[in-house]
Length: 261
Image 1 (cartoon, rainbow, N blue to C red):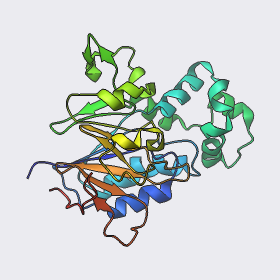
Image 2 (image 1 turned 135 degrees about the horizontal axis):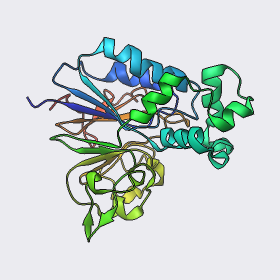
Image 3 (image 1 turned 180 degrees about the vertical axis):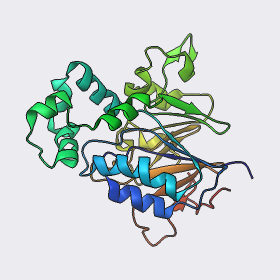
Image 4 (image 1 turned 90 degrees about the vertical axis):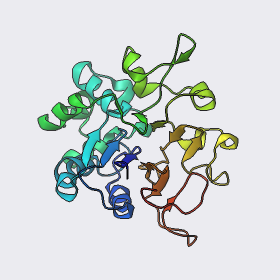
């Protein structure tokens, strides 16, 4: 059997859903890889706990390789730390105060909020080292997507500035991308055209799949749940409780999924 890769979508400070998803995943071994698509922080109540669990606890629970990608929220905090960015930290919807409170217990320390100084130095160093994309035999993994270049879809290695990979939100990418399988987060699936998805059309908040594009931001940290896709087999896992129709693992067509199939 080919080595398996599990790609996990935006967590946004929701440790409860991260742990629930972990409990639903099959046991992984040293030949497997876990890829986190970024956005570990903000909005949810425990950004600090999410980072701590991924960095310190998870390596003790699995022999699988762990790859943590950079999301636009980690990128935004690095900009806050380096030059300030009140336009990011002040809007309530970005969830910066929840992130602050998870590290300090004080969501009203506006000086620390505006300069990001509440982040421990080791966390800042970790964020700076997060790669912008990852690729293996199964797919390309990137936080937001890839742009067009010379009448074709660019490979992430060709994209400059690399921050495009974290922030792009192009309708044409979701409607027209062709190429190697690609897994993204960033754009909430509820914003994507449901008529184009090959997966549970009746639930627009669910994972969104069109051809070789897998969109996994199902609202974790914002009242939704956490989604992962496993290759080979294109099996989807969720952190939400089963509805009674079967286990929390399904193929993109909605049929029951078999881990590693």
